[in-house]
Every structure is written in structure tokens, then in C-alpha cells.
Length: 490
Image 1: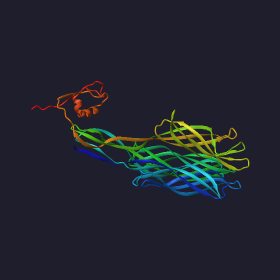
Image 2: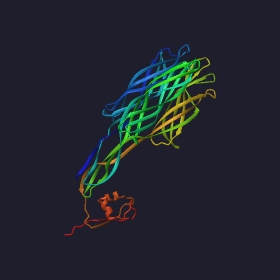
Image 3: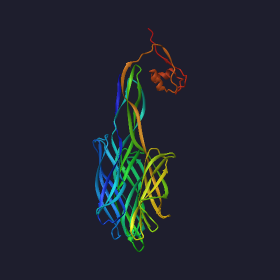
Image 4: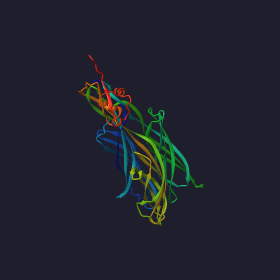
């Protein structure tokens, strides 16, 4: 029995991993009371090895604190880190792409120093060749169908954006944080266009009071990609790798002009849909056959959906508060969230968090961590969820309790999986017993289609249709099928 095979050679997403690692930074004895602490981490590389992925980068810590004389100060330090995530299926030929976020941060005093410890969460995506062999022809009755496979094309690049805006007069900028939200991914001919905004949060000192304000800075990044075309899908991660904020104060007008200059780094993937004319089933009219099947699995992404929701409620607090405290600033807004299935449908559930800075009756400052849970209904299947927290505010209506409000900008991107089962090879078996009658009547199974019927009769679909031109599929119960066989008379 003659058979023909072909090999599909492509490149795609092979696996996704989630890892965690802790990084730590020490500050000196001048730190009396920590008011707020931020950790911004960036990766400088990720490499696949034998059974592991090694990734490394830098973590930048910034703290706002009070010294022994109740002066509000700031300090910054950076540390390098490296970590290993082990997985037996990883091998060196894979390409690793990773993105990192600060999931939690804690502060402790030990001896004369203060230690800030950040727990970093890393999402790792592994790309590599996805090759498979499939039956393409031969001396068989073949059932063909187009099989879709998603292939990946990696892109990367950097961009700069800036924004100038005016705010109330401030004396000193103490801390700033940047959170990126990707709102649109558009594939044009030869270009992946990434659009979104950076939520810039600034903590400043105004006299002896702490004030905070936010600014949404839009951005647009264009990455060249030969595979990009209208209709193709893509995903991308954008991080802020550098931020510079310059202030020009006008005391007479009581205003301050701020110029924010941001350096952005983008890593993306464009998914191209390939179509393989594959054989999904086969049989022989002369011999029994044993089929070996292959599975072509590929992963990609779908559309982006954005939802805006206003939330409010009573917060969980990391420390006590009373009416003698003056609420001054809400800073470092962020969120942790997941897409979950509930009895009422899909929802994005998580916690919006921030640092509430207050000044006590004695003039000293302290920071209190706020946590506001939320649950937002969404129309989504399997998707990744990212949440941007905007304009979070707090008030103390009842002593000892804080109520907060915030606007959530939720971005969902559908995860897409394509799976196909096709014939990889055929092994020839024993000859089939051939009937010597000129006509046979066959009672098929109800619901059979033309291919299922032809396979049971060991006839080509064309022969079955020619013998039974009035037959309708799927077959009704009680239907009879006539098989004619050509007889040679001697």
C-alpha cells in the first residue's frame, strides 16, 4: 500500500509558567517610620535550559519615611536578582519571554536597619518549533479537511512618551509609580500597533502635608512585523523601564508645571493562522488498516475587552485609625484580580489596594494599607484579566473605619486554543473478505453521514452516492442502502 506524508514546520507558543521569587533591600538607621514603600522590577533577560528557565533583572525600591525629628524624607536603592523556575518539559531550544510584577511587599526592622522585601511574580511564556507529520495521499480512500494551526511571530521594541501638566503648588516630589494598561492591539500591514495609557501616581510634599495626584499618560508603540496583517491577532506586554519627572514651581500663582518623560519597553507576539490540507480519516477497500493519529495543538489570543466599573465600600486596614488623624494622601493604587466562574456567571474578582497616609495629633505621619475587595460581572470565556485602579479616595465617616471609592479599568484578553486530530500514518493489515454477490442490501445506523456509511461498506463515498442517488444524510432510522458490485461474465 502506497502512502504519502508531509511535514508541517511552524513556530508557536509551547508552554506558560508562573514563578515567584523574593528580593530584599536594606535601608539605614535614619529611617524611623516607613510611610510608603514601592518596588518596581524589570527583567533584563530570561533563558531556557535543560529542565529550567533562568530569569534575572533589577528591582528598584523607593521609600518615603519619617526620621527621628519627624521630617518626611525619601530614599531609593536598587538590587539585582536572578531566579530559576524548574519544569521537566523545558529545553534549551525554546525562547523564553517573561514579565514581572510586584505582588506583595513587607517592611521589617532588624537591628539598626530597615529591610524591604518584595515578592515578585513572573509570567513566563515559552516559544519554539511545533512540527508534525501528517498523511497527505496514497492508495486509500481519504477524508480531507482544512486544519488550522496558529503560528507565533515574536516582536519587541522601545518607545518614549511624555506629558506636561499643571497641578497645585508642591515643594518636593517624594515618590512616583507607573502602572501600564494596554488597551488596543491593532495589526496593520507589516506593523503591530500597541495603544494604551500609563497611570502616573505622584506623592509630593506641600509644606508639612503629604498630597498625591494621578495622571493618565497615553502612548502608542509601532513594532515592525512581516506577519502582521489586518485580521491577525496579537498580545503584548509593555513596561516602564525609565521615568523622569521634572517640576517647575510658581509660588506666586500657587501652581506647579510637571513634565513626565517615560521610556517604554514592549514585547509582543503576532499570531498568524496557517491552514493545512490534512487527512482526518482513511480506509482501504482491499485491506484492513491501522491508523496512527497525531494531534496538532496551538495557542494564541483573541479580542481585547475593556470594562470600567466604579466601586466603593468599607476597607480592611493594616492599622488603627481615629478622628484625631488627618487623612492626607492615598498613594500607590494597584489591584490583584482573577477571572472566576461563579453561580451568576463569569466575574473579575480581586482586591484594590493603596497606602493611606495620615498625620496624627502629635504631627507625626504614618502609613496604613487599604484593601477594598471587588467583584465585577463580565462577558468573557477563558481570558487573562488585568486591572488598573484610578482615582482611589478615602474618608472616615465612622471612627476607626475607612470607606474608599475607586474606578477600575478592567482589560480582558481572550485565550485561544486550536486543536486538530489528523492521520499521521497508516499500517496495512489483512485482506478484507469480498462478497461475491452482485447486490447487497445494508441497513445502516441512524444518524450516519456519507463518510461513516462508506467506511462501513468499504466503498468510496462517490460509489455509495452513485448507487443511492436519493439518499439523504444523516440517515433516518429504517433506511436501506443498496450496494451494487460489477460482475464479469465469462
